[in-house]
Image (cartoon, rainbow, N blue to C red; front, side):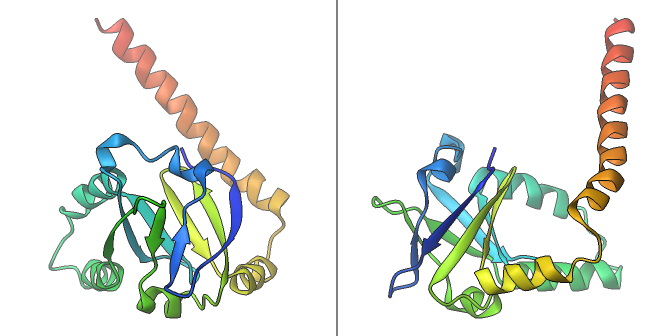
Length: 164
C-alpha cells in the first residue's frame, strides 16, 4: 500500500529514482514493471503492473455505445506508457506526460494506496489552494461514505458466515 510523500528531482534524461518507501510496496507480481498515464488535476498516475491489470480488467466491460465512456477511455488510454524499473531503481517519465503535468525538475510523489501520483510542486500547490473546502470539511463528508462501506462489508461478512 503506497502512502506518504517524497520530494525528488528528475535527471537530465527525465528519469526518476523511485524512493525505497514506495519501491518496497511493488509486489513481485509486477515483475519490476509499472504503467504511467495521465492522471487527474494535471498529475501523472503510476501503477505497478499487477494493479494496472486489475484496473484494466474492470475497463474491459466499458460500453462502446456510450459516448462518455468512449471519450474517457480514449483520453485515459492515450497516454499509457509501460516502463521497467531499471537496476538503479529509476523510471523514465515520458515527455508527453512531463509536458501534461508541467514538470520541470523537482517533483512530489504521493502514495495513493494502490497507485502513486507524481506532481509538479507548483501545480500541486495551485490545486490545493483552489479547493473550496477545508481538509476537515472534506474529511467529514467522505468519512460518512467510508464508514458506511466498512459497515456494509462487516454486515456482508457476518451474513456469509451465518449462512454456512
